[in-house]
Image (cartoon, rainbow, N blue to C red; front, side, top):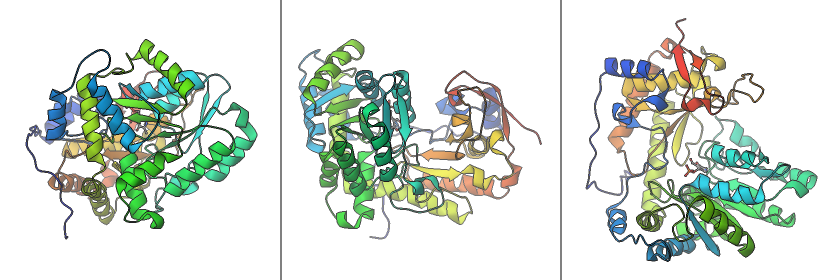
Length: 456
Ligand SMILES: Cc1ncc(COP(=O)(O)O)c(C=O)c1O
């Protein structure tokens, strides 16, 4: 086959509002150059996040109609539980309204002052929930994951050597070992099955439960199939089952690889821990057969899980990012190599060398993408991570811009349009100017900070 096409046709459409560059300039100024402050109907192509933005299938919408909204014992819960356990056979599946709610429950129970939780790279809500209990979240990404330009196949791996040394030194303080697949904070890069299994074995050698943050499990399984020679050609469902076979639990945001607009779960094998988690769930989310969701959401997730493991969908998904990435490279735009499962990451610091990190090259590029093309992307760099706990500011490790792809939402001509927008910027990238922050909140400043463009 020559072209990997979108493996679906469109039954229901949402119109996009086309705006002029002058209108966008005005919207951007009114939003104080913070793209989170834009109204989404002023955005043409919204690549802010792949979370909760998926297009649901006709079967998911149909499943929503049979959702049973009983407080207790809903058959929708049983369909949800069965769909999860078909892929990840944990003894206990506890629904939550989002991934972060599953994290909050887990770390409320096993976190606490003095505890240390290692991972390949914690996502920021995971880190936030660990730290909120007084525990420490520690990242051990594989060294090749830290170099944006190297096209290593499994940049999401955990660094097993550092993990082992850490467990030897701090084992008593460790309540569990985690891995995030794919590694969102590290560029949507996958971990190999070999690495996942080795990390689980290491955790178990030290008597620690192994917990998978499985938000993008299907994208990770696809990359395992494509890039890990021993796994070539295997069925995606079998790879998924193997990814979770050695784990003792998982946290999940169904807003990613379950095609749902809301939802999540915590799954565990430990009966006593699951019992405590359900008690906490009742306090914070709801009864264990709905856990902060409507019955119809549970149905949408159950159906979504049967669709996400379709290899034609996953081939198209990975190809969309690779297609955009290849064209950006041809334009001379530096990207994180290889393109990730859910996003293309631009190395704004490497591209816009005339803008120093403390003038936010990622923010400059994100604003230019909106102004030139109406595209909303997300800065992942010094704006997001630069403010230190002691109040000082320093450059983040990288200044990236993430083009996160909503699932099944945009077509190839949207992808071409994204590339054209970059081509327009690439004609004279030196025209982009840095920014300064004029006001910011005490924490998580990227969401609400106000910016001003620098004139020189
Ligand atoms: C790897 C990872 N873990 C956890 C979460 C949190 O999930 P939610 O947004 O459903 O709370 C996210 C969301 O972006 C994520 O990417």
